[in-house]
Image 1 (cartoon, rainbow, N blue to C red):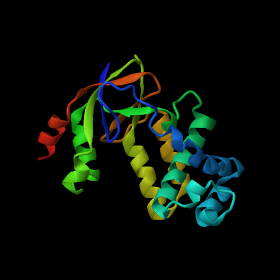
Image 2 (image 1 turned 30 degrees about the vertical axis):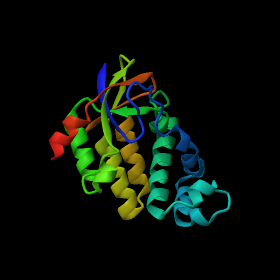
Image 3 (image 1 turned 60 degrees about the vertical axis):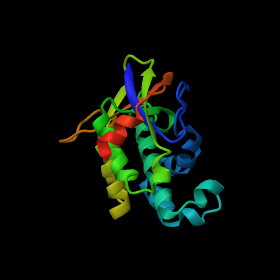
Image 4 (image 1 turned 120 degrees about the horizontal axis):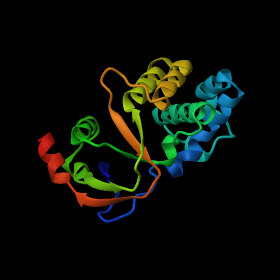
Length: 198
């Protein structure tokens, strides 16, 4: 199966790693808090960065990144407790099956950066050894970000997680494809991406 992946670090011909697995530990305090209840999670949001029990790497993050890991923690809690057969977002690789989605991602996150930074981004064709990867509508994760950043609405974040892992779709779904199976960068198609955004 041929899919696409955008990266600053992947090298052509290289086997991909599960992107965020090294950061998985940063979500665990939020998962543990939710195991105690939503109030415990909210307390972590309000006072978490001052708690001495947090990993140093999490306690040192700016507020926006701290809240992003709280969202991932809430998603992981919902996945673990309600959708145990689904892949963990932090223990897999991400792909799209169309280039238009990468154009949107690039324009949202990279187009305004200096050329030196934009030059670090590459788009690859990926050969994935997985006949049935998981597909989830990324817009539910985006909704969870809005719910957390604007209102710190944990229940809304968890509702988004349930929709995400159950395979529901929004009115204009953006399907992110997830897999923990072997995947390799087989072709650099960065030129196509550049031509789409210029």
